[in-house]
Image (cartoon, rainbow, N blue to C red):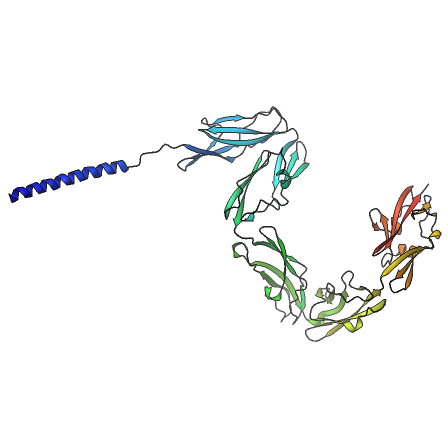
Length: 494
């Protein structure tokens, strides 16, 4: 009995194993991948028509155009428009000054290739100057100064259309595709204009950053042995990825390689600037050349005034922030030192604007070895003008004054122009007066106290600039800094 049961158990086990194997075989068979049909998912343009501009009723040529077939399995295939699987048609060339399209279809996928019918134009180029290529999340496209230059048929002349203008007008077949700043990354935007399609890469970042720097001001390039670095009025001008600009003060700790312990020519120092945020954590670098001389080579030290810094009104304070000292060395080499440099001292005891007059201001330059160079330069103090009058105007030839105050001087062709003995009487706020002869002011090349301009271009009036040869009517403006005085019309009658 036991032997019989053992045989029965063995038989059952064999049966179970056999059934289990069969089931396993069925599962394996059902889990096998069956081949899926491959379909066309899309068509994209790889290259456009070689000939893009046509005259009315001219046949469109498909040369140069290549399409990419994108399949559902991820594979691609490049084909020309002559491929028999493609359905290809054009919108025609009957209408002048109109954009047409080559329409391509394959298994439901479509693509359009532009061309232009035009008797006026036959070429377009895209100048990308100023087109922003780095954006912060959420920014709009920034065209900058980018533009399209449209060439006229049979001519080298072009018509220019700013991209920003084209984007806001119809008739140019303008479109922008693929542009989005929602998510940081690197992308491509596609710009279509007339029959042209341009693709350019752009980057989207999470924050605005400094993308470029430029130096404002002129760095000093000549030093004496032992002198310290002079940053003068140097500034770094920055521009961010979103177009904002800013100024950064230049400090001595930004430089490396500056050494005046020994004389030498064509030395090099570098300025390093690392903004808080820059692309790829970039440090900007600017290299300067400089020369170090011994002070024994100094030949002269002269003061060079910035415009207006030696002219004062009564009661003004000193203003010499932009002026410089010009140090000349043997051999003609010149160094310019800022008036604000620690080596330059202004003797303020020689500066006085309590009353009008001409005075001497003492400026002292001290070398690292203690040698002093003293320069005395003249400055002028005047009271403010409160009133101006033309006196003795009747002495001007052909003088006539109308009821509205307009003065006319009548001449004949070939006469000599002149103000006669007329003069300007100036009254200052301190009650003092001064006279300035108009003819003398006209004949002065420099240092005029009265403004004389030829109208309407407002150019400085000169003796040689007055044409007395032919009949004409001209206007002269007589004035003073701070107020208009009179307009004189001189008329040549014959």
